[in-house]
Image (cartoon, rainbow, N blue to C red; front, side, top):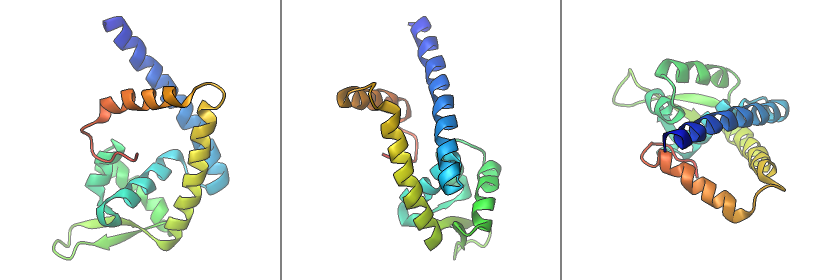
Amino acid sequence: MTDFSFSAVTRMLRATALIEERFSGGLSAIHGLSLRETLLLLHVQAAPGGRLSRVDLAKRLHVSPSTATRMAKPLEKIGVVGREPDPRDARLAYVVLTEAGETVLNDAKATLKRQCSDLFKDRWEEDHIAALSALVGRLTTHLPGDLT
């Protein structure tokens, strides 16, 4: 099983790199967002109350809290996300989508869904895509922030 495990992981990493490159280019050209920025916005939108602390955002993006802060900063500057202070803890602030952010994200989400369809078009049948989704999903079952 070890050889198959190594092969599976290296192929997933290669596929991830391909997807990131292809999707980021399209999202950037059309919406001015990278794939990672789009995922950040999707996680905020999907969060309870439509807000996430930077620590929770970091957990969902699998990055450090400082990286999550660096990712959110330019989005905040262009008015796509805002900062909402916690009423009980002055040290804590939440990342929230602005009205402009909702619009940008909804447009980007339509592009992302099209890109996902195009990735599998002419190669896979629906039941194969569903099986792949289920198998890969088993790797992340107990992690926070499933966007499906």
